[in-house]
Image 1 (cartoon, one colour):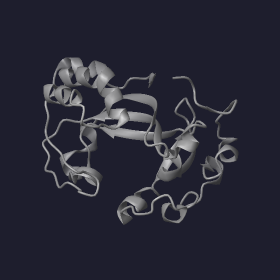
Image 2 (spheres, rainbow, N blue to C red):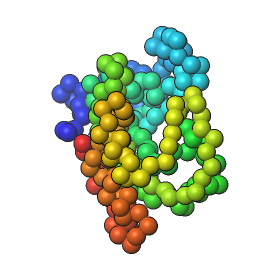
Image 3 (spheres, rainbow, N blue to C red):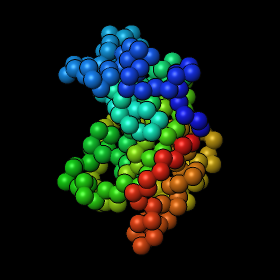
Length: 212
């Protein structure tokens, strides 16, 4: 995947607001919601109130070298019309989801037990209106946890082995988020195999950006 651009211009701190009016440049950040709120946008008729509210959460807007250049709402960052012009934001993927989705208590997953592995720059459409264009920071943790699943975020869940997951990928009726399939296909199963062994350390704190 090549570097993201809007038209022929690289997206920078100096031009990001001009290219994307709902993005606030670093120099003019305000404490209020970025751009039009999700509720006011008209994009979420029939959606659950909590889901609409989540789309107002603020994302860090980046250039292609992972340097922060502004901020925008989750709604703005996931619109395909913006993604197709190169809008990129930072994301974090943890291979144990936490409080928002699974209700895991912070004390069961202390920050010092997380491993930073790498950064993945990827772009993936969703349904024609929404999509993903993210610089995804990959975190890994192995922990015994208690779940209190948020049914507004998670329809179902199960514990799986690597072999279970491979069989699930081969089942046509099952669907997966684009980032998860990309990472699993290229990286996850090796990380999983190395987990709990001295070899796992070689996967951590990678400096390069993996572009997919």
